[in-house]
Amino acid sequence: MSKITGSAVRKQAEKYLSRISSKNSNYNAVVSLRHPENVLNDIKSSLEKSGTLSGSFYILKDNFCTTELPTACGSKALQGKANMDEFAMGSNNLTSNLYQPPVNPIFSDADFNPRSTGGSSGGSAAAVAADMCDFALGSDTGGSVRLPAAYCGVVGFKPTYGRISRYGLVAYAQSLDTVGILAKDVSTTEKIYNVLNQHDPNDPTSLSKSIRKNLDLDFPKKILNEKNDERKYRIGIIHETNLQDLDPFVRQAWVDSLESLRSRGHEIVTVSVPSLKHALPVYFILSPSEASSNLARYDGIRYGHRAEQDREGDILYAATRAEGFGSEVQRRILLGVFNLSSEFFGNHFQQAQKVRRKIQLEYNSIFTFPNVVSSLNTLGSSSDETVDVVISPASKTIAPTHEDIFNSEKGNGAVKAYVNDVLTVPSSIAGLPSISVPWGKGKDTVGIQITGQFGDDKTVLEVARLLESQ
Image 1 (cartoon, rainbow, N blue to C red):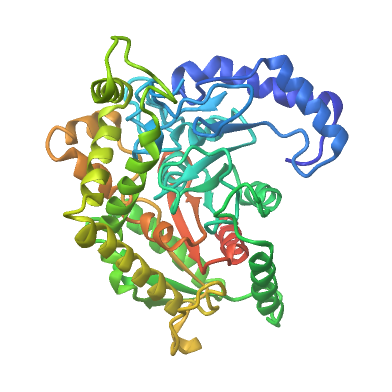
Image 2 (image 1 turned 90 degrees about the vertical axis):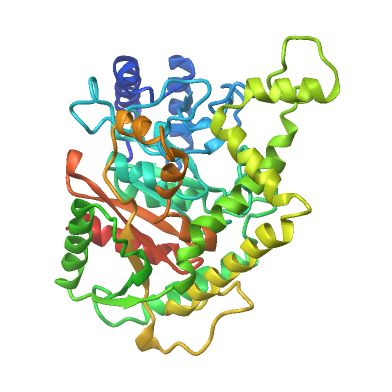
């Protein structure tokens, strides 16, 4: 993404448009595209402004609202963008109720044995991996940027919750939804993050200017106090992420990545976040609960698809939502309504919120720097017991085939699909910055996940660069 002008920009844009035209039928990554001349004219105009991303070609996930292209969220309930799981609900990008599933471009047998791109931002990851754009934006609620990045061999970054505006993003679970970045390398990712990392008064969850000032003053000041030319990090392995059923290939890549950092003088220690074992059930109580409220607006009266047969009242609503929503979305809406019902609200939703807070506090206790926006930082941890970042795999396995996923879903497949997010959900629950960096090449790539303290996105990106350079 070096600065280019004139004919070089047009040539680059034409290359991407040609790649989409020739390859998208194989990968189903892009579901709608602006007219090529409009794209070329806008890129030409951007050069005159000389911005950081001038001349860049990017793709949006299909749940960002835009003026020129339709926004469908992969659903019939709403009437280019990148393919996705319907309303961002899924881990393999196989739940779209509108489009064919995207295919992972990094596997050479994709034509006859297609593999998952991961979800729900699978189209965005596939577009980057297939060299259809400079970068793509997705949304990450419980791992929907990092898991696709891990499967497709690209970089996927979920910044601290509130760093990037959600204005225009169709909500799944607004206390978790985070705009994420998918790119070919960490340098490009950081450039995009620096542009988007701004307060937005249109988004009530956007971090205020005063909080941003405190964050930006706190972390860099401590980093500049380091005397070494290359800062030496204290890197944690969370005991609870060392899963017994971790794929041996993934485990070895994790070990190799840690050893590469140790060989360069960085310290590796084990830490514990005891409540992490509850993160997945907490996530699947809170996110469906918020989704059931957010998706109530798609009733066929004000928004989205409407059942054709003339019906009244609740019958119309039920028919419209049964036709418009796919099975996975319907399942999560029902689960959310159940959790919010008067009978189970206290034991499910409220208890999940308490455990979520406990997970946040336990994360605070393991990091060297305090969470500057939290009034309940856990005190008493000495610097000898704390770390700068923690590292884990981003996924339990490499990308599974579509056939394997469909076969597994014949039994308790829904439960198995939910477990895909077990390594990415914890940082979402706590609102922490987290990035998946590819380790390896091609089909042998494994996503290594780096997570830092709330607001310490800078350190996460710095450690990501270290891993990328190995």
